[in-house]
Length: 274
Image (cartoon, rainbow, N blue to C red; front, side, top):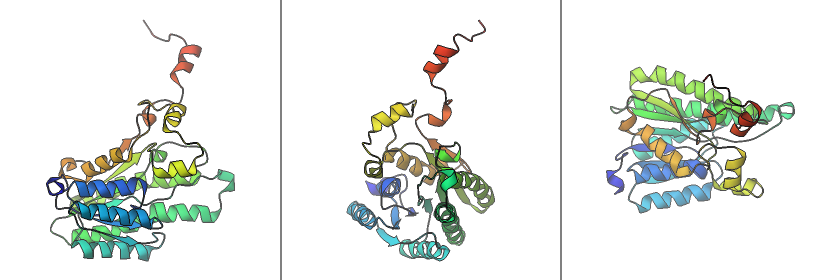
C-alpha cells in the first residue's frame, strides 16, 4: 500500500522529526510511498522509533543527529541524506525552536538561538538541498515550516514571531528565484496543533479549553496528521502549479477579527444599512 501513495518513489529529508509535527510528517510521507531520512537534535527516541515504523511498512529510512545552529551541520545533514537516499526530491524544513520572552527581558543569546535554528538552519539546509536537486535530472520541492505567528503578533513572542515572519518572506523570495530552475518552494503555517509537548509544558493543558479561550472558529485545535497531509499535498505533483505560497492551517484563527462576536452584538448593535 505504501508503494502506491501520492509520494511513491520520492526521496525526502524531514528535519526536526523526532517529535511532534515533524515526526508525523515523516511517518505520513512514508505512508504515501516516500523513503525518508529523519533528523533530530535532542529527541533521539522518537526519531528512532519512527524509523522502525517506516521500515515496518516497507520504506527505507534512517536518522541523523545534527545541531542546525551550525552551518556545517546543516550541510553535513543534507549530504548524508542524499548519500543514503541516492538523491533528494523533498526537503521538509521543519526543525525549529519555540520560546517566549518578554521583549524587555530578551537576551542576545535568546535572540541568536532562535534565529540561528529557525531561520539560518532552514536557509542553509535549503541551499545545500537545492544544489543537490539542481544536479539531478528530477529537481525537487522545498517546504518551509513557519507559523501563524509569522503573520500576527502574540504577547511574549517578539523573537519567535520575528523568525516565523522571516521564514514567510524568505519562502516567497526563494520560490521566485528557484522556480525557473525547476525547484518549487512553498511554506506551511500551522496554528494551534496539539502535540505531546503541550501536555508536558502547559499545566492542566486541555485542548477543548484552549480552543474556547482562543476562540478558534472551527471550535477545536488541530491534529498533527492534518498538517502532515497538507505537507504531502505540497510535496506531490498535485500542487505542481503552487509556487511561493504559505498554506495556513489554523481552524480560522487568522481569518477572524480579534473582537469576539458577542462584544459586537452587545456594544455596537445593528449597524446594517437596511
